[in-house]
Image (cartoon, rainbow, N blue to C red):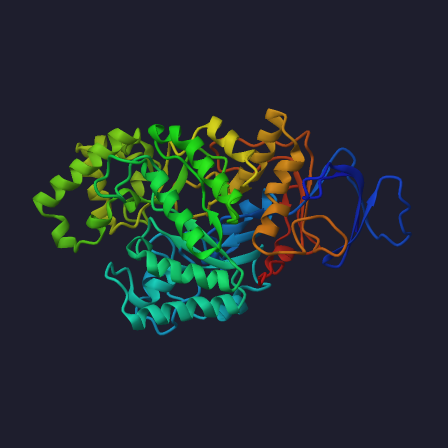
Length: 531
């Protein structure tokens, strides 16, 4: 197959050029510049005049490992593929579908309440790999989650791990790294990662370093004030303290570090952008390999309990209902939200897993009006009724000016941090158009399109240890996107795929053609990419 007369934006951040791309089987056979003589046996020819050809987009932060092994997994992946995604980095925020002791009694807790293996046991990382390889719609680079491995040995318990449990956890993590995991992810804001002492985190970070692999961090806080800290207000901004913690781990261990989804929750956190970037830049300049990733949305997906303090989450359910407990919690949350510039009106319920379908698509303040209760009472009732299992979109995570500043930063990679929930009343719009939005922002602001493509292809491949994907070069795997820039468009705030993504090619197979997904080709095209 010859893709002819395109502007080739090859993922290297070098200027685009007119040329042709010849694909044979699953590889790029050769890249020709305009004017070079073409061989006679090129096979089918697609004229791409006026169009771009880029490498397939690599989603640097995804959680779709929890959906890859589902029997009917296509709905979870189609929106991503339609926007040009061919590869995903999965297992982020401390939660991976695989990589924990197989004999665990806590298999039902894997995923931390945000995700689930639906009763399947994927303690064996290699077993999970065999299950998904060439049986999914995208390629996957997988991290092993600290939270998953810790749940495997102790559930969500807040107590320090016993020496035996710590040994079992580290053995499970190291085994996953031996079997091709690209690194380790941490979720320091989530149960049970938030309970882990620094020594435990550094132990695992050193294991990643030993294997020359990456460590990614969902930090302890992304807002100026946070209930992750006690007291929840005062002193150095909490998101900066959280970044200090990650930087300290990186310095102590020397591990390659990725700061997950750099965001600034609440208006009063927006003033910390410059200091956050300065910290990252100084760390990088000191010789520590650190970077960050971002999405182009002003909200983020999370679970409803994420704003609750650690001391409250660690309590038994009966103790949470005590009057003094509720008074202390109300006081801390009230002070924190006022100091933050973020409130219950910024929490939109997307998925109650069938428990309260009628409130999906509503904000907590809207639900409070229906229930004729205070927003605080409503929030706690939502947590209690659902057992803490409600997914939400949290607004005021950033604003357009912050997105613009972050997306141009040299340490930035692009991602979606999105997943599809078919039973949900509201989807995360990033699943449908995050990458086209990045391209559109580049065009809107007159910045180099080559830079934007690089951050969603070649730079991400290099960051996670891939040498034969992410760039358009002879011998690389043929993951390609054909884009018509004159038609590139999306509708903000809608669960709709973008226009202008004309063709998506994964491992040499055309999986999207003129906006239509080839259901046969896509079913088995995706490969597990061992690192």
